[in-house]
Amino acid sequence: MRRTKLVPALVALALALAATACSPSKQQPTPDSSEDIAADMGPHKQGGSVTIANVTGQTWTCQFNPFNPAVNQTSNGFVYEPLVFVNLLQDQAETPMLASSYEWNAEKTSIVFTVRDGVKWNDGQPLTADDVVFTFELMKKEPATDLYALWTGAGLQSVKGEGNKVTLSFAQAAQPYFFNFANQVVIVPKHVFGAGEAAASPATWANPNPVGTGPFKVDPCTANNIQYVANPSYWQPGKPYIQKVQYPAYLDNGPANQDLASGKAQWGSQFIPGIENFYLNKSPDNHTWSPPVTNVALIPNLDPSHAATSKLEVRQAIASAIDRARVAEIGEGGQQPAANQTGVVLPTFQKYYDGAAVASAGYDKPDAARATSLLSGLGYSPSNPLKLSVITVTGYTDWDASLAVIKQQLAPVGIELTVVDLAQQTYNERLFKGDFDLAYYGQAGGPTPYYELRQILHSANTAPLGTEATTNFERYKNPAVDALFDKYPTADDAGQVQIIKEISGFMLRDVPIIPVTESVDWFQYNTSDIRGWPSPQNPYAQPAAFNIPDVGQVLLHLYSKSAQK
Image (cartoon, rainbow, N blue to C red; front, side, top):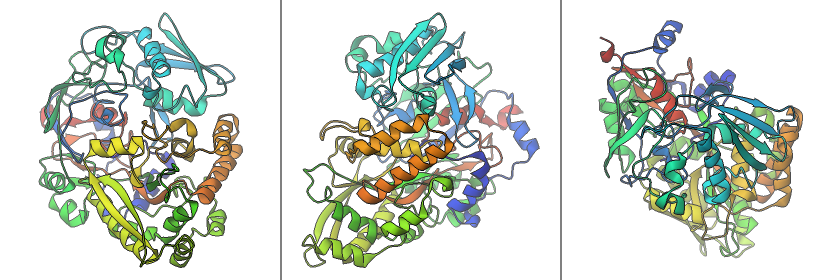
């Protein structure tokens, strides 16, 4: 299941980006008119079901812990909800969720949320401000649950509740973190997570029967399929319209793509090679729209115990040898654009990009001669290659294809690359604990490059080898970079742009990761019965099923045409 789930894009760029991500012939979204969009807004009659085809690379573990990034993409949005939904595809438009409103103080160091009245957990107990306070205090008590480093990196100082109000106080201006604490953190029930096995191990508890406020309940889960049924006591009257969601476990892209092409599954979120002939031409009801998002990158292990990848020259050689455009063309079938070494996604964040610095650092084009020279200085050559392995996820056929191209490009400069395909859970465990030479991975993003880069580079997001890191899996530590991230929240717009350019400079100098392609938000959808899908004309949420909490917003919009008769 793709980790690239929190996607930066502004509404003014949404249409342009759709054309940029893939060749125009492969982008055939539903030609929604204003009348279509108005009709999709509802209200609608309840009924119908939708099947998701999203490759996980393994069977389901039936664990739904919202604090466990290995499994929370099947719980957050479906079962658990945030305080506020922030739509990054629509100029950060906000939808009040478990908070009916909020108010900042003048300095943006304190925010007061009003907890929505009348919301119940799906076991019938009421949601209260105590649940919200408990959720945030749990992240302080158990740092492994603080997935966005709010207490250690964002300066969260205290969380206090009074009546139906909850106040979060920070050490400095915290508006840039709103996306994280209001949108990405989901609220959990104190009466469940504060007792028994959950209280003893909140970060790792399996949570097989999740109790949330969301539109769906899990009923049942098996190794091969998760069935979600509509929550009859959901707080939004009349919703969800769709009454069941089927989420089969696919081990690789092939069967999932077949189910999409045949119409057996209506919602796809993975790479389809030759998408025009294989999928789009099979039915006029088959459509795709995959806006560009963050980066898919090679993550080198920087811990000194990994003698090769911790050497700057090795990382520079890899970054120089890879022809990113070729990887995008062959590995991703032209459906993803090439990335650049700064990690700034283009054209989404053009104003943050320093092309001159990229050229000066020598990463504006592939340079096999430079890579060969760097490795030669370390004693490596095609006849005496440096042997490295890269972990990836079984079933991600586009990643396999991309890594095959990378392997081919690295061999002539003196690197022998072994691709290791792993089941998703095994991959996650090795990634989080740093058990790899290289890992192929797509990180989450946000409204500006700050969010993705902070997750990748801030030392607050890493951990000692063998201990689970939250997002800084390469184990990069640089106090100068940390200081730049810490300055960002109080800087004005021009200052924030300059800070990102300075951070990009460290991406060029230190090569902590190696972006390869710009990941797109894989999305295929069938309109024969199910309507209400997000589109370039109505980008109300990120469209891929692996995006959280956006998946919940999509499910709240979907409806069955046959159920309306």
